[in-house]
Amino acid sequence: MITRSSLNSIIYASLHTSSALRKIVPKSLKGRSKSSQDWLTRQLNDPYVKLARHENYRARSAFKLKEIDDHHKILHPGQVVVECGAAPGAWTQVAVSRVNSLPNVKNKQGLVVGIDLLGIHPLPGAIFLCGKNFTHPETQQEILKILNGRKVNVVLSDMAPNASGTRALDHENIIDLAYSALNFAVQHSALRASFLCKVWDGSRDTKLKSDMERYYGSVKVIKPNASRKDSSEKFLLGKNFQGIGR
Image (cartoon, rainbow, N blue to C red; front, side):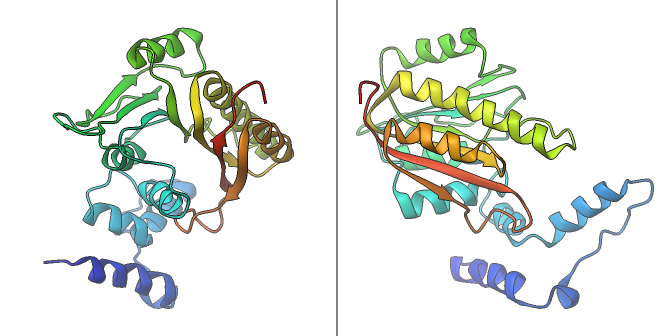
């Protein structure tokens, strides 16, 4: 039986032992592009990918949200969570567990709604709107219909555009997605709610953070350990929503 301590040992060894000694190389790379080969090699050697398999998470990204929530306490039983860019459902798994949204819960049952352009395999305790563009008004109306008058306690956005290969353009696109999620959060959140969004480094980071500070009591820039060191990915967390009339 694999214990939690042994899993932590796997991560520690993978992170701190010489990569030259431990690196696994895929057996068959014939016909694959250089980028595809690099991705496969990275996946095989990623300790969070291994841990995700052991703990039955759909993706390594679950550990990003777990770490953020462990440190900043944004998810609590009974909350309403709207997750933008939910596929494949790893963040959703974390949210369902922490807000207590599984079926037949008697006390403090939460509600988790996930939206994505892609299909998502069903998950007990979550309602998915698949093949839907969160930025479209009709999709947001569907979300509000599901909420049935309940205010949102946490808006999560892991949305990202398809990479164009042009860093500045990709940054502009992901910031636009973050603003779409922020606008929804500002309009439909309960007081003291939280907002978490993914962004990539670029020129508009400071303006987005400043705009969040108009509505949230505190705003922090976070780079969890599960975010790859060579990635420009980071997260902006707004806590203690103050309302629109601040």
